[in-house]
Image 1 (cartoon, rainbow, N blue to C red):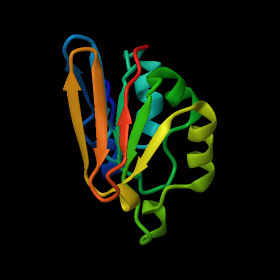
Image 2 (image 1 turned 90 degrees about the vertical axis):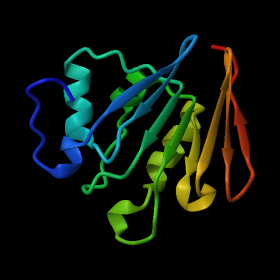
Image 3 (image 1 turned 45 degrees about the horizontal axis):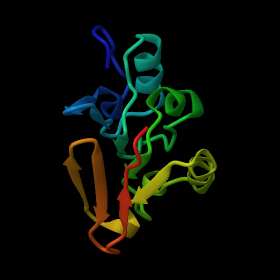
Image 4 (image 1 turned 120 degrees about the vertical axis):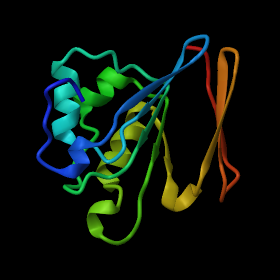
Length: 139
């Protein structure tokens, strides 16, 4: 989060990393950050555009709103999800919004670990449990 930001919960004090993979691919790691951190990043004017968004679930169950997705513009989201506690489960309405936007979702309760491979202008993600592979298309 931006300098001076003090999140109200530990989830919103987590490290946020935007990783550059040359030549021009980005992966945004959000940890368990939620809407408060996302709003702070948006208001700070941070460049968030990333090919891949990796995120946990905020304790409130709320994260990944439309304005944040508009700024990140991910092709793929890798998100943790589990049955218990309930706030750790991916909201099905949010998952449907991702599908409507054309964003691929790898839910880790279904995919397990996800292997990312980068080569030049292309990248791919492979789900450990299902073997599903998602490949990038040049933007």
